[in-house]
Image (tube, rainbow, N blue to C red; front, side, top):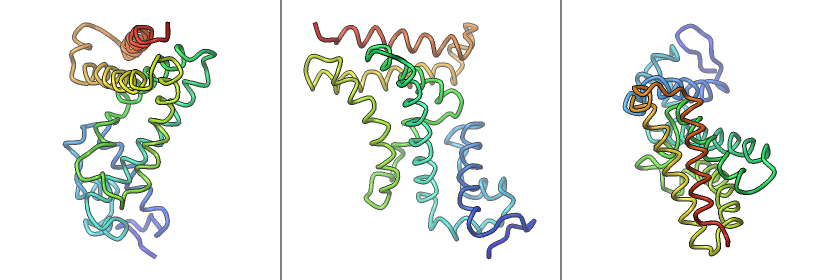
Length: 200
């Protein structure tokens, strides 16, 4: 049994707690603030305790990225299910991505972090596919050709991430935009992009 300094955690739940604490740290301060030492400090465990669950910083980051991909996939799924037709569903999915990015400072920037592309991070790759497949299927439904569908997906992710980043970087807040306004603008931009590539 492994305890933290206050005797709070058992062996089975410290791993999940470290991921949760790391996600909160990133949401507050961005990926640049992430370190195993800071996560341990916030989780109130010894500096060496995380390494009993994650052999290195990369492994912890991969677990964080897998959680981000999973949470995003769930959020996108819910947005899609709330709409009756493909164009609206795809635009809503883009808005859901923007909203999550603003809330958590996490999206493709975490999922595609350097060093996480190897086969040892299979869980991350599975969750990433679950996220992107939802976009792929809808993009292929509305686009005229497969290549157009793939380019549309790339455009939607880029726009959705850009809207969230502009908000987080203060560009939109200086104009008085709320999170809700930015998400709405992201949805509107996505719809315009989709309709521009839609089947005639």
